[in-house]
Image (cartoon, rainbow, N blue to C red; front, side, top):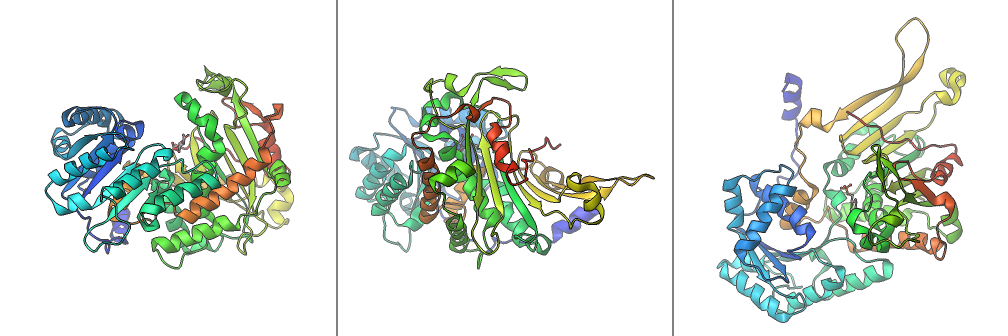
Length: 520
Ligand code: BG6
């Protein structure tokens, strides 16, 4: 590390020092045989132990229907960590310590007997906090959420009333409903047996370092925040592109489409962090209040606006990395005449004082040429004199790009003189790269999220009014699509940047998509 870097490190300011120490607890995972447990949850918990971040003591109990011994469950999970963890290696000593705290409880989620067995397992730990401090992770279908919380409550494992010496929290995965009506029903089911403060709704994008950094970038720097408003910003582009198709998830995707899978949650979360007002404090409720306010300021979309402001698309067969790939309609469990969107692009307006008149363009899609997520703040053109007068549209406008993944970083694009005797101006770039600055340590989103839920900090989780407001936006878009199958203009070849209509959407306002660049 160079001297300058060492000095910068000395200036680091810790914000979480006042945080409560982690209390001993048991993490109960419902859906222990599922993909999420194997790919994300167990590897994340294992890494937290490697990093010495788990509470002491702790236990993890997997609950699922299949008959299995603790030993068999531990062995399966060891293989999952080996295969899916970010380091791909298992430290035998840490694994031993982890496995000794890993248990299995067989049972149907709707059977009271399952919860008796679970109580027996928790009692066997012989520690009051491991019995009563429970993080219940519902890695199961939302149709089972209601059953699980009700049975947990009936078994005396989940208490709605605040307790002086114990806590229970419920972590739920997406999809949280299919629309506003079903999300409201789910919320009502959950809140019969636990308080909103006990519910931790996951959006894994909020666990990403770069997404968390949006607030730091905006509110710990005076030079950027004063530019963050309608007088300086021409428009904002948020792109979340994926090379992958729907793979084996055709059945799920037929029900969700890009708008429910990506927009309702990840994209609207990123938008709210990028555009929200400064919160009054760093307290979770203050931050979440501002996010909800932002979502509520999005100009409502009537069906006629949907036709003008929203573009959907679906990929047909094409090439990714020079390899042929099938179209969406040829994917497993997809209807051959499906009109489900694998791409969506939107033009939204945030009707508040700061952003009045500034278009926010959002797009996400599967089978696009590269996997990258970024937010681009595109600034206004200089006055039409001097260089702008001579170069016209060839003079690039300034931009700040927050690259969320991969090659995480932040770039500032501005114009400079090309050295030499001729007079030439062209864009140049100042770039901050996480890897260069901090090295390659990037914890998985789930590590951070699990740790926050164990610590009882809900900042990185979605509050009820947030999820419901986001569904309201999605519902209004879906209402505009109701009964309208895809037209020819809405298809795009796999490996391209989406349908032509998405280009037209921006061109109408004299804008153009700026595609993410492969950054080294
Ligand atoms: C999930 C979606 O929530 O997010 C997937 O269901 C998508 O379809 C994934 O691929 C993208 O997450 P990430 O972290 O890879 O950008």
